[in-house]
Length: 116
Image (tube, rainbow, N blue to C red; front, side):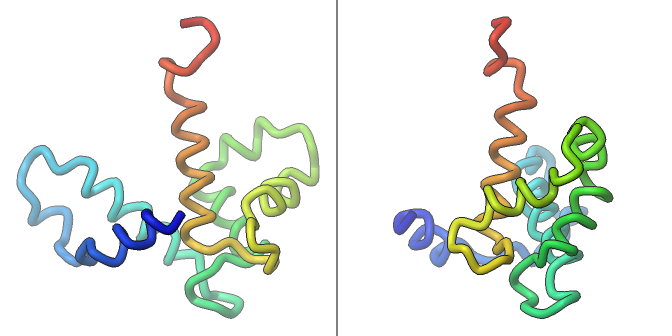
C-alpha cells in the first residue's frame, strides 16, 4: 500500500548488529532477520532485490522446510509463487515475500485457530 511505502522510506535501515542492541529488541531483531534471509537467497539468478522461482524454492526448503513437507501437491512452490507474485513478473520481491511471512505468522498463531 502507499502508506506502507511512505513509512518504509522514513524508517532508517537496520544496520546495527542485533548483538549491539539492548534487551527487549526482539521485533527489531526479527525484522533484521527477515531482511537478511531474503537477501541471502535473492539475486543469485538476476535481480538482487527479487527471488526467482528457484531462489524461492531454496529459501522455502532451507528456512521453512516443514511448510513444503506438509504440502501434498508436487506443484506447491508453483502455487506459492503464483499467489505471491502480485505484479506478475515471475519473481517475488521483498514486499511480496513479507506477505508470505505475515500469512504464515497468522496461521501459526493459536489466537487465530478455529479451536479458540
